[in-house]
Amino acid sequence: MVVIRLARFGQTHRPYYRVTVADQRRAATGKYLEVVGTYNPFAKGKEQPLDLKMDRINDWVKKGAQPTRTVKSLIKKFDGKPA
Image (tube, rainbow, N blue to C red):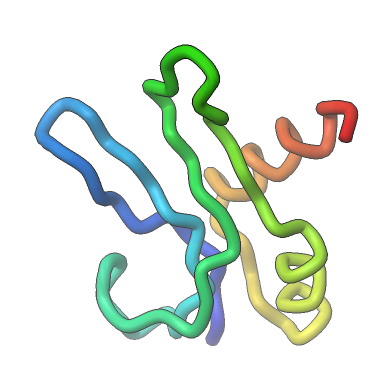
């Protein structure tokens, strides 16, 4: 099964996440099929806290990929913003 999930990167106490499409059996930060966005919960200044490639996410969902609960909530937040 293909899932859309977060992969944690960054320093201790300063997480930075990549939104990745990966096989469910792989490790969270292991091999992935595609990076479809980023999430920085500690964005400062002009940094964007959330950047998603919605066209690619929608393509993967049409192909049967399942977003995790956290990714679903991030997609809802992202869709609520004016483009």
